[in-house]
Amino acid sequence: MKQIWAPWRAEYILGQKTGKCIFCKEYSKNDKKELILYRGSFAAVMMNKFPYNNGHLLIYPWKHTSQLEDMKSEEILELFYLIKGSAAILKQEMSPGGFNIGMNLGKDAGAGIEEHIHFHIVPRWNGDTNFMPVIGEVRVLPEHLQSTYDKLYPHFQKLRL
Image 1 (cartoon, rainbow, N blue to C red):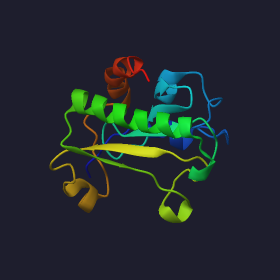
Image 2 (image 1 turned 45 degrees about the vertical axis):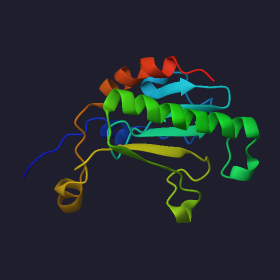
Image 3 (image 1 turned 180 degrees about the vertical axis):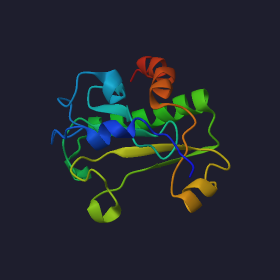
């Protein structure tokens, strides 16, 4: 039997669930622990703790809503600014061949956290859909999450609207 290690998953599996929304501003003040790369006036950027690929980011408004129509213009502008800036940072630092960028609105659309809208940015590389996810039903991430965070964090601190 072959072993594949993902030690950061134990924290999620064994950790106590708070019931708080991970995208709300009050959730955490420890950005490094929660993998928050950027806090803006209306929105934020967080690394996905359970990524599809290295560098998988979540962009979300501070406003707790599941409806796009509840968003104000300035909130939408900051969200899209952060999507644009995040893609540029990932492109510069990780050199992906492309990106999947999108959002799942509602449970039936596949939203894992349906009560708070958020965008996913997933860097993609040629060949990243190899036999492991297809045959083994696992993904292999070549870099620890904290290492990726440490690499990306300084770039996000330079973002300005």
